[in-house]
Image 1 (tube, one colour):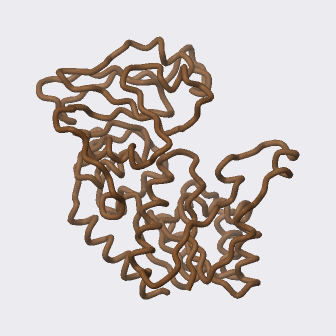
Image 2 (cartoon, helix red, strand yellow):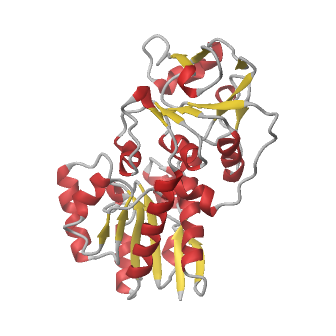
Image 3 (cartoon, rainbow, N blue to C red):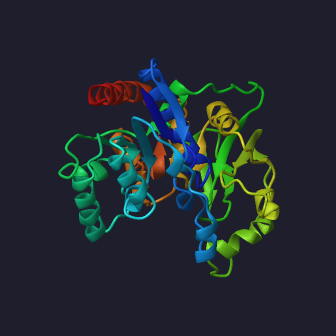
Length: 334
């Protein structure tokens, strides 16, 4: 038995968190199978714009076959574009596909219906969502659906992650939709004592342009003896004046290095959903600043990012319980 698990469509390192944890989960659930990584849609990962760029892309996934293909992430909105031909190919070959840790966040009702009708015609073996909204929107279209969880919450259970030196005291700041905030701590360095002076933009510019001016923000190495580690998950060498604008800026081509930081930090402050998710997965509190529908992954596990100024405290027991439920669902479905 051969199983291919998508693990390439990273728009940022955060996508690697849930895809890599999912890959290891499948290997553990099917030790007798040949479990390998599958290339995902190149258009999802790299988003070429011009027609000649799209024409020149080699779609490696078109040349990969397996008994079961597993796709993941916020990709349901792309079923009718980036995944349509591959799914048709899978079905024509008599193979199966499944969606795990999948989301339709932000989908329009018309696209939901059209995508649901496609699912009815080319039925996945099963669908496990990562937020309840996705489950409710597609459970009537996919016969075997499960109100699942985001597999980013499984990084501590599935991946080998280093613990950094105990004398390295720090918390994580990771922002990609607004400028770096200025931090102040009243009392001990705990997440509840941290105050942020936030700045969305310079001169009313869109963040796309304003981020180039981040280096003109007040420079903070740390507060009250704790380093502020700026985790940049948009891995690119194109704009190093953005990447290394402030002290303790971190980039890596190794997702396990990012996870070592989240595991070793006292807490995380971020507008990134998966930064906060993996922080909680390692038993560390997180404060989330976003209204994105993708934040539904927290509600599914009982975390409320809309209360207490976005502060969420870990609950490893619920993660363990839901991980077992997800594993049981997958095994019973294939």
